[in-house]
Length: 161
Image (cartoon, rainbow, N blue to C red):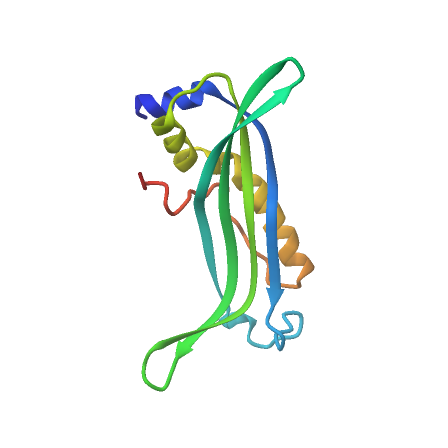
């Protein structure tokens, strides 16, 4: 672990994790409870840190700074095949997507490089359990096949600078 990331870890204290927005849908003709092709479904995942920001709040007699990290997550159930011309075709049967926010109290300002590294490498640790629960319960409500989710998942763009 580099010094900038460690400095951010030392300066930030988790304050909240919440669902900022979500979308879920089944294809009009898709009835997962009765569909005979459920075994052909493939599952694709999305996990991308999209942005972060520092928010300054007045709390009575003092000002606090919050560091917020926004992460887009999603899962879609697809059937893949081939078109007549040989190109790969994807048919999206269902999807569940959302944007989760991890909010941290800034005890000190570690600087933009440290905050960026923290957003890309650490925020997903705090968000993932909440997303995992939301996705699992939402997929059950939609009668989608049971998902077994990993304990942790990292953002696909975590190595970006």
